[in-house]
Image 1 (cartoon, rainbow, N blue to C red):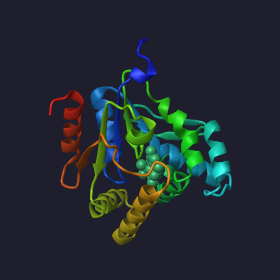
Image 2 (image 1 turned 90 degrees about the vertical axis):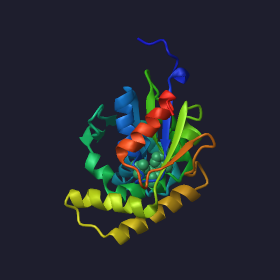
Image 3 (image 1 turned 30 degrees about the horizontal axis):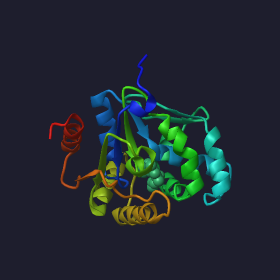
Image 4 (image 1 turned 90 degrees about the horizontal axis):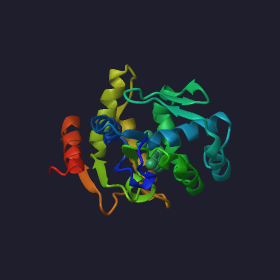
Length: 227
Ligand code: DC
């Protein structure tokens, strides 16, 4: 058993807009470092799903926030990116485009963000944590040892998403995807609480013209001080 206190456990914060490659890059970084991984967006997605299943209005701040403490959530570990809610596998549900939009709506509510704070901080376990989200470096883990803000043009992000969905056999319109991305960026960036922005001490990496492997090695170089 490690004697590290929770605050001493190193955190690598990876923030940025949807579709910038944070999820893929963060999982690879966690595997390379042998650290835990927090997909904070999944928590907002699950909460939105749980609220809609209980017929709670997504804007009903008090009722949505009240759901958060009792949510029975389980994440797969390592290469398993499955997610369970109340014992039911909900991975496909929460990865759907609509679930992202619903998550962005509940994520704008201050009481909801407050209610999910401890759940996110509980992921900080030895030997370290890669935390992926919008406000990892600015709010949840302000003392993170390294903060990275991954971004890419909205067109590039729409194009990546389009290719992912087409590969899965899901027919989509790229113009609709771009419109969704712009709407979600605007909601995430303009909300009053924890808006999407790089922390003052974050390293901003524009991934538009970079491969996943290049992004991973740039971030690893930051973590190991070899840059
Ligand atoms: O990263 P994602 O696409 O799974 O996130 C879904 C939504 O949740 C996103 O539009 C904004 C919100 N979110 C947030 O506000 N703060 C986080 N740390 C993670 C996600």
